[in-house]
Picture 1: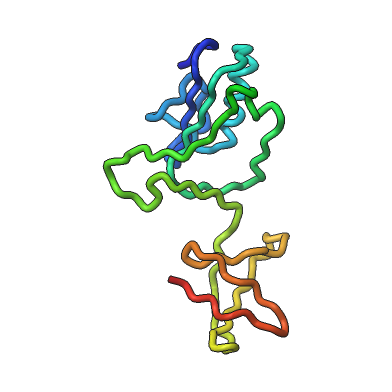
Picture 2: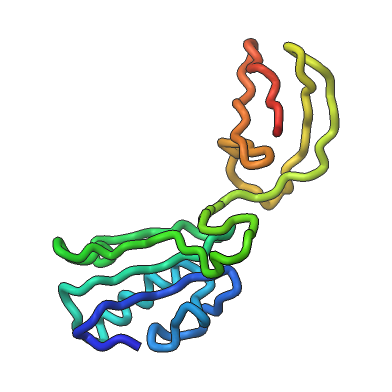
Length: 163
């Protein structure tokens, strides 16, 4: 727990719990989302009237799915001498994990049910139908962490090859 006079460090981890307060947050008991860390900083500043001190949010390497936009406002910027910092963090540097300290925020959704529909320009054309719950057209397609080019009619892009 930090007082108004010292640095505040908060932690986010995929195993975390957003029902904690900023006083309960630690590397061993992190929040589950960056949104909760952002809101905790707001609560901390309102409760302690803290100004001009270092605030750092350590985010454990993982993929975090965003269910709503993550918005930062002017109150989330900190001070000229002490900006609020969000830093990637490897909570267990002794072990090798898929992410280690790589943080990925995704607002996307997994598309399944792909079927081969034909070939063009030396590549295979695949089709999948999106569920009716998807209300906006997708902008990007990612395969195995690689962004594929968008289809362009009548000039198809080269085939998307996943590695």
